[in-house]
Image 1: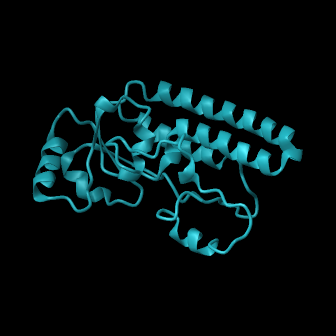
Image 2: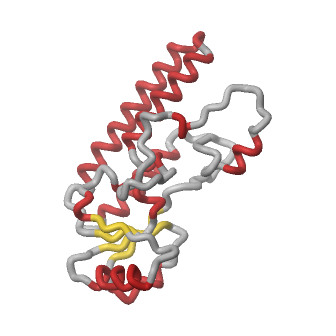
Length: 201
């Protein structure tokens, strides 16, 4: 699990569990900070973090089950190769990304490996009138080409700005066939996000 603050339900369920528990927030090598430097638990959207996570989880499994070290190492090598491939493709597809305004803090980690000078991040919750006016000014600017939202945000609220609105589904991914686990789930969903964002040129 990630952390008791983020996974409060899971944390309470495993409180009295006597087996091995792995709390991802304990891994100091993972960068949990968003673009603004504040804590953001959606670390898995930064592929550098995904790479680190695979390494530390594999290390934990090997330490606990040394008899399957060869299998775990083989799986790790394959996974890292896939992650590196997605990362290269992401940089290629989003190389000429137009200036965007990001209105979902849950998506910050996805943008960390992209040219951040092209991105303006705004918090839409608990915003002051001053910030709302600033956001309106930015969204009205001709220099901004796209507005990026989370899938659960209301896109109609931004239709008056006549910008391309892109809504990314970044979490709570579920399998269509719940009886058959697919190792491609992360790859497919992450690739879809890259494709969607690449339309902002």
